[in-house]
Length: 524
Image (cartoon, rainbow, N blue to C red; front, side, top):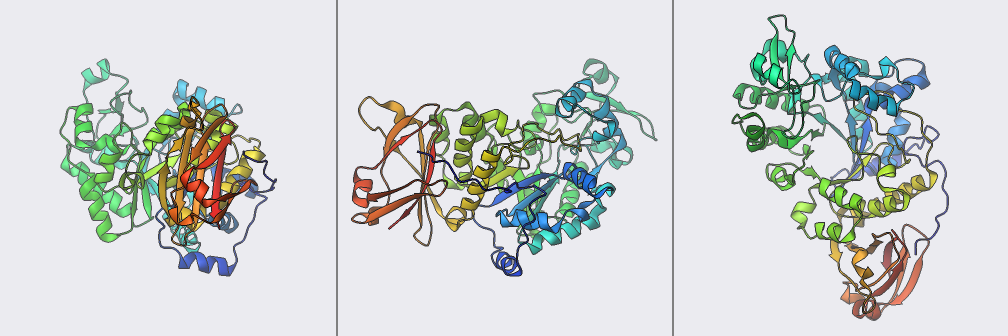
């Protein structure tokens, strides 16, 4: 049974009251161990929102140079390997104007910010006008300095790459209109949700909005034409250049430019892009990381094209539905697939986990998500229990109270994840068994084991159901037979002494409350 945890104040990932300075010795140890672990952790930051907060503290416009070293020290101390700075690229006046004029978007902004101001709407960070750091953020040189500060602390920098579209005021609209899907007056009249007229110095033209095949277009974007080899070559060159400024990219809606998807959407045969582009980037930067935002069960396809990670939206959806069996079945996949999944409970596109899951279910889902194989993907505000999702068009967030119990949970979980067994150990899905005839509640359990090279053994058990459940779990460690074992919960205060022979032959008996969990360290 999950025990009440001791309160530990001031563990907010972004709390300004926290100024944990890593010592020189700790920094040197981080630098010595910069070799990428098998299972890394990533933290996503809404850059413009964070700088707005810092600006308020400084009384002037903040840039990337104003991000305090103490905050980077704190992120490093929590064990993050990657920091994804969302929306650093230049956006344009046209994109900002569109963001401000869309009534349905404004309604969303006002739900987030009841005191909404025009300056809060800066335009979507995905309507890119130039793949150079926005001057208001300090430009490319400030990013270079930020990257060096991250590297000093053993962390890597991830940025955005949006392959499908550009903002309507990108220079290519004027200089290379052939790089985009052009339309005509008939398209504009019959499909106004997918086409727009763009004013140009050399004559106005009709362009298609960027979109996916299942929805209307994004009206602050124009669609790139991957049936044009020159357009594909230009985007390849952009990505090669970006790769010199960071250690990895998160590729927005990466499946949209796959040839079959592109042809289904636009009726044009596209040039293959990802495989050769990734090879070209890695020829210059062998360790460069590619993470794909991908849906429609195309994760494996993107992995085969060279992506290091693909979004695991299927796990998120199954956890949200709240049924253990489909979640457990998701883990039947081979580790060659699972190790390349980015697993999350929220990001800038999803609802806040606090609202989507509720407190107890949230914790159980987090144990499953982050103590399974793959990239552990955390979102700014998640650990504090933020409830309001921030639109990528906004540069200010509302003030929200911290949920201290949830914050404490994440502080404990991040501490557990720093253990080497979860970073380079061997993971295995175990099978729960019924506790007695006629008791089907065993089917509510998910059970994992982790084993480290130092013979450390961990047993993760979760009752992923809204009711109390019982089961037996046989330990897969025959070598522990004949020993007395201590099972200590790394996430709480529970501990048991049990005979190893009993746990291997008959199994560990579990009787756990709704959404209960244990992370047992097994010691002799």
